[in-house]
Length: 205
Image (cartoon, rainbow, N blue to C red; front, side, top):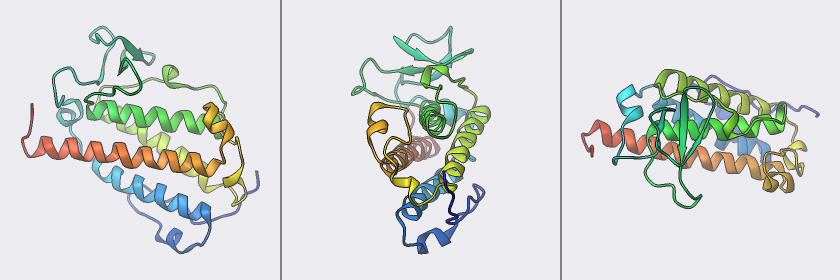
């Protein structure tokens, strides 16, 4: 894989504005990724354990100790499991803990099946219901994904099947997958910010 430097991977505390000045597709998708993560990360570092575990409605999907979860579908190895809805179109209410875990598995899986060993899926990961370890795991996954994309060439971004995580990924130019993951960060990041906003103003079920 040839490497062409476009911008740089910055720390989570800053955004590389030079990306917005580069007229390439890779710079555009990276700019969206980097700024989406920059905004979400700013909120993640402020979240308390109470906000992390708060259920907006009783029984909301969450990350629970294995022996405490009654969900029909559960994923993860170790003592914590991520609860999952019965069907893909029935997500229901989710906690911040669930949203953080979901973003972690999305980023980890896509990184592994693009740049890694091509072996990890949602059930293979270790999750946590504790805010510190959970956000650290998400940050590590996001940083790995960001670094992998930063080291690609402009040609690589259009390679069909560069990721093999899903059948859709295998048939699509890689830029489409980057945009999909960006949408995941924007979508679920917005949910995380909304839930913590509601908790902080006292709108609690």
